[in-house]
Length: 112
Image 1 (tube, one colour):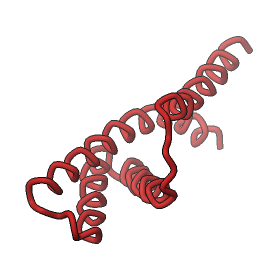
Image 2 (tube, one colour):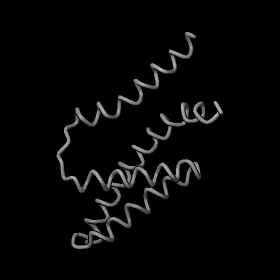
Image 3 (cartoon, helix red, strand yellow):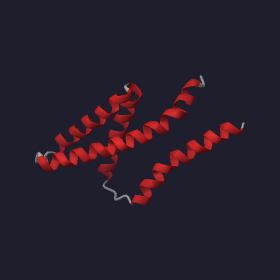
Image 4 (tube, helix red, strand yellow):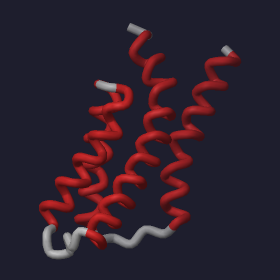
């Protein structure tokens, strides 16, 4: 029973860091392909390429990371459809919250 939370406790930060980097690289690759392959009027093709890149990066750790890659892709698409402008400080805060929670929980379990 405790094995799953313990596994997620250590896997979550790794998947978060790797997923964020993979998501940024996927966006960068699709942006460059959009420029060089003239994909400006083809949003469906851009979305499919983005999904393929996310899933390709997700294959590195197989099942758990493949599901995480799909969730990252869906979150990226949802945030893109909201068309809200995010500042760098908002992105950094949302990126640091899970790490702070991880550290609090980690050191909390070390003390007990």
